[in-house]
Image 1 (cartoon, one colour):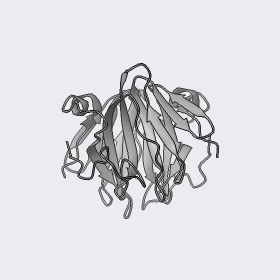
Image 2: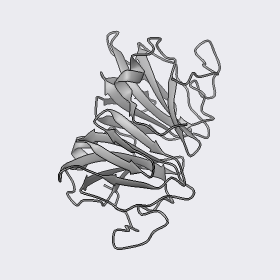
Image 3: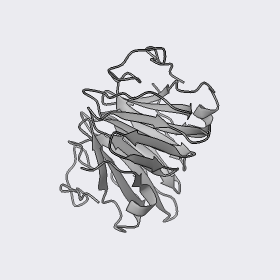
Length: 123
Length: 123
């Protein structure tokens, strides 16, 4: 792929679906993804993969089993493998996040249900 | 390490040295680093590691052998392994960047000189 500057706002303008990450980059077997999320996801964990969430817009609420962490723009959260987590937003807010995780990572982790996205689109 | 929100501005306030990345996170054998840069680095490449530069403040000029790419806040550049590159800024501007690369990555790549930083500090 040609080397160029990847503009996050421009990439975010290309999709509107919630909880359906798009791929914008790849390096060292890891994918860089963008996602728009609103409301609540499902409790899940990834047995083998650590996962990074960077907030670009809005406020991410990350529920863990023993506490709740919040992050806004300019903040990131790293969820170590095996850690159960439930990402959500507050009061129906749509937020934008950047994800960084191995190519093998499934969005619902060890779970598989109607929210699972197997084939992610490159944008 | 305890899971918490990592605030980029707060971390950036903890150091001022140029061309001396600090580590703020680790996942899947990769490090998340912050750096302040000003002026020109050195031409180098990384034989085995792809490298991600995300601009947080200012304008990054990335010279490649066949073209020059620029990136501002909200933009990122991925340099594939083996690609010679020279990061720099314009007119003495200090800029802030986030780096994402394998733990094994040396800042000067295959080169080793006075700009090489072997022991990076966690902040």
